[in-house]
Amino acid sequence: MSDTPTVAVFRPDDDRLEQAVAFLEDRDAEPIPDPMLAVEATDARPRTDADYVVFTSKTGAELIAEAGWKPHGETVCAIGPATTDALRAEGYAVDHVPDEYTSSGLVESLGTAVDGARIEVARSDHGSPVLLEGLEDAGAYVHETILYRLVRPTKSGESAEVAAEGGLDAACFTSSLTVEHFLEAAAERGLREEAIAGLEDAVVGVIGEPTRETAAAHGVAVDLVASEATFDRLATETIDAVTDDD
Image 1 (cartoon, rainbow, N blue to C red):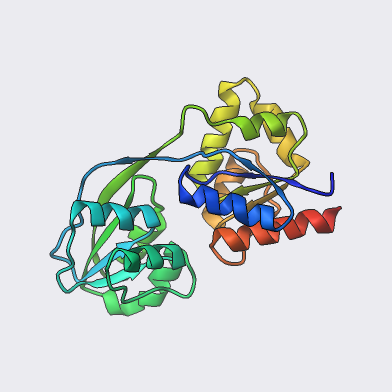
Image 2: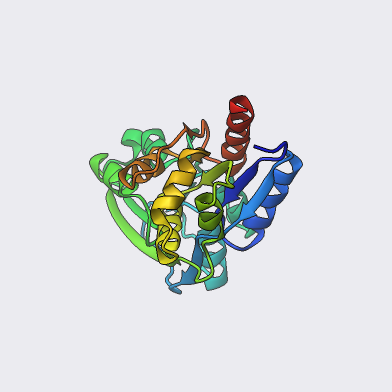
């Protein structure tokens, strides 16, 4: 490894990718930006007859604002600081944010308070079933609205080529879908096994246990799960692991 580790980052090709690249560069890493997610809006709006409404992403917050959604007295829940900040930037009040920025963290933080309540979950088409199942198990009546679909950009895959060539020191996977799309892009280039082998020689960091499970199911060994479900924490801990291995 050189003094400047190469780190693959898979954020959507918007300000999130720009911020991720800048964050890595500030920590003396060489980013390999390779967006694995693109957004296709459905133009759907959350229902307005719920007691609670749950948002799980910055993208969802921006889309409901574009669609002109207005709250009607619901308790607005947000998973994570990025979602919270995006909702507030669009003029929405946020009433509840779990200490643990995950679906299971939200379920645990709401606890028995949602027994008998109507909950609207507004998110992408690849949301974790943990959230819906957990809320239902807590006694809530849950409805899901798909605000957008997540698809793989056609030009994605540069990082798979770098991994296959043995040039990748680390990779930061931020969701199960980024793992799946990385492997799809590698397979499209006829490099799936080589890319997985390249990841074996790199530090693989992920956000959350579901992402780790997805990676393992596809034969990708994970070195660390970020202690907090944010990109900044994931990137920091991944770079630290690369440095420790050096």
